[in-house]
Image 1 (spheres, one colour):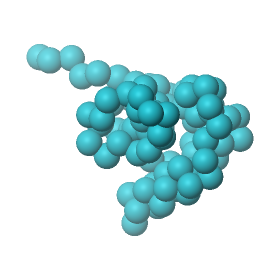
Image 2 (cartoon, one colour; image 1 turned 135 degrees about the vertical axis):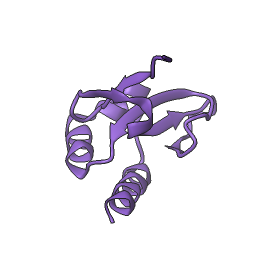
Image 3 (tube, rainbow, N blue to C red; image 1 turned 90 degrees about the vertical axis):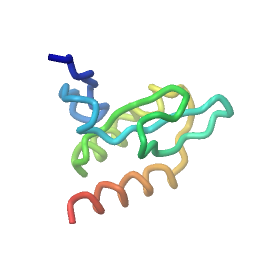
Image 4 (cartoon, rainbow, N blue to C red; image 1 turned 90 degrees about the horizontal axis):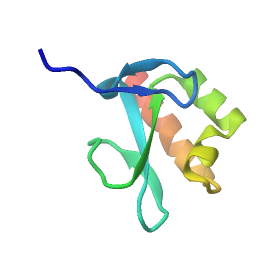
Length: 88
């Protein structure tokens, strides 16, 4: 049996299999965007598809610390829209 890769949520710190998360990636040009495929090159961070995890990540600035840069509000808005789409 093949072992499934696990990752940790930046909001709630729970570990789950990689496919249960939404991936956010910072590419070589310093752009931060959502990675719907999970295969874009660059530094990745993972968050649960839960609005509470997003709120925790924003409040604690975990994404900014992970990528060592200021995160635009549009990235957080895109994340929120993606989470709300999955809930519906």
